[in-house]
Length: 466
Image 1 (cartoon, one colour):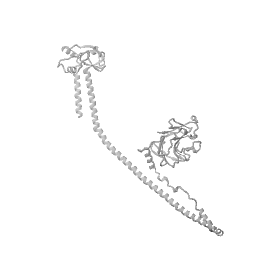
Image 2 (cartoon, one colour):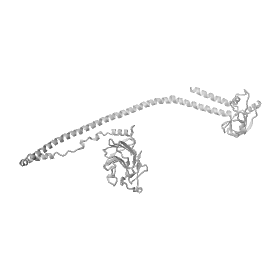
Image 3 (cartoon, rainbow, N blue to C red):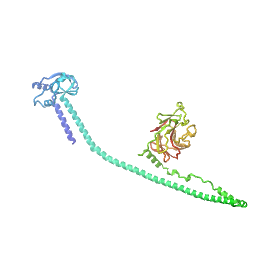
Image 4 (tube, rainbow, N blue to C red):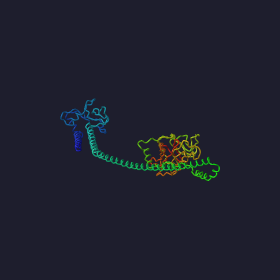
């Protein structure tokens, strides 16, 4: 249906309503009253009526049936009007107070006395005007919907196809770049491993040939000396003293074989920042990403320098005046501000995140359960013994610490959180920045015991994030 036709239709409705308002004759009451008297109708009654919110003494006509042909308005009113069940007269008024039709008698001395009433025709005209407004709004809304369907949705359909194709091309292009980089990196690493393997094998062959030849010489010298010892007379033994000394010197000059790092594959030949970053991202963000370990701090390990929250997730450094001596526990660190977590980790892949907030001094990492707990020595100090591996932050410096050795770590900005990833099958411990998913440091070590998450804090607080 076209827009012009609908507007015409609404215009016709509006004109019809205006005609009804013009023909009601409400503004020509005296003439109407004369006509009523001349036609022998019942007289007009005066009553105190509140009409349209105003109280006044005004004539209220008691409508009765009129002869056919007395006017379109009268016929319409007689046909539309309903009889009052109480007074059996036409209900030509509308009670605004009760929201129903009423008659003049009800207004004079009945149930609607003193109520605000309106002429039925006036009320109907208002309703018709309201319906016309609603229809116009509905028509305009329909036009907007048609326009939305024809223009917006059609344009969106085309746009989504273009955007989807662009997104596919972008994904394919990105995957292609990653795949090519991975293939190149894979080839490079495999070649590096192959070269390292050949180098070690060559060293082993050289060592084997050298020590086999040395063993033969040593065996010959020993056989010769044994023969001289068992088959020579005293005179022969004394006269061959120089020859015997030469053989002894040869034997003593052989030296002892030693196992060196040159005889083992250098694990660094397979190191790759690209591979480690992608591997960590796949474990942390991939579709089959594992769930984080549900860690909590063990209260019996918490140093008296720290306080532990009720949920066992937050460690806070205590000022001296707030410190209290806790009950003795062999598992508690008594000098360093350390605490350990449960449960222990000895299989699978585990990850956890710590919120370090604005702390200017903290350590996060792992340690063996057998780490020392008492005293001020390095045995109980995280990162200063062979049983702990931690990322340390003091003032503005970040470093990895193990067995008293530290490796400086460069960070682009101060870390708000530190993530740890422990992959037991590959014996790999990885520290990363959860916000940028960037690797901070990687440790590969043949762990000989289960590991516990370990923390130390000497400024403000740190929390385990779940």
